[in-house]
Amino acid sequence: MIEPAYIRTMARYNTWQNNQLMGILKLMPEEELMLDRGAFFGSIMGTINHLLWGDMLWLNRFDPTAAAPQCEPADGHKMFPTIGTWSAERFRTDGLIRLWAERVKAVHLHGDLSWYSGAMKQDYSLPLAMCIMQFFNHQTHHRGQVHAMLTATGRDAPVTDLVFMPEDM
Image 1 (spheres, rainbow, N blue to C red):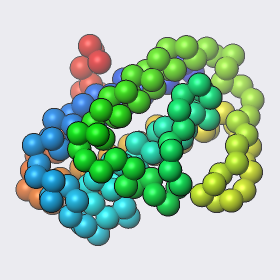
Image 2: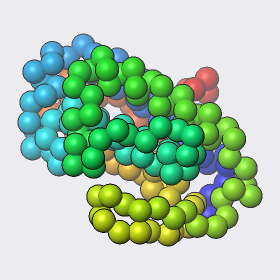
Image 3: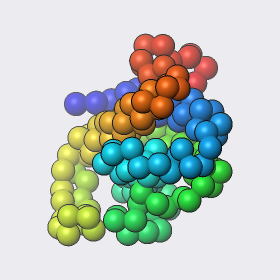
Image 4: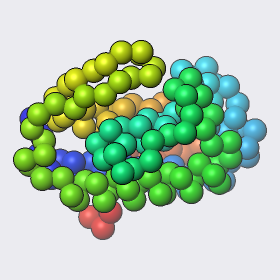
């Protein structure tokens, strides 16, 4: 279904995209980041917090040594109250994602991943490869929402096409 090279490429892409967003979001006034824009998680800040919460949760499922988010699913969108605290954790988590991706071998991608979902209140067991694809798809989905919110403010949003990712990422 997938191979380690895909995982490493997507981990690099995740870092590239988040670094571009950080550069834009750090320049925005806090009230603009917190403004409810009608998105599923309300604001830009709510959306990037949810995305980081999800990344921490999935990474913990893939690598139990990585810290799980320390809040309930319903509070994931407000986990980090400022762009500064979010940026620091985003940077740390992206580094952990890259380290995990570098360790994945083809043999690790077979079998199922089992977990209890606190959000859905039930047990799940799905192919690990599908869960990893979900991890990266979730990132792209919510960054797309942030991209739309940024363009709605009249700001330039970052380039998101995978084919334009710099080689040094």
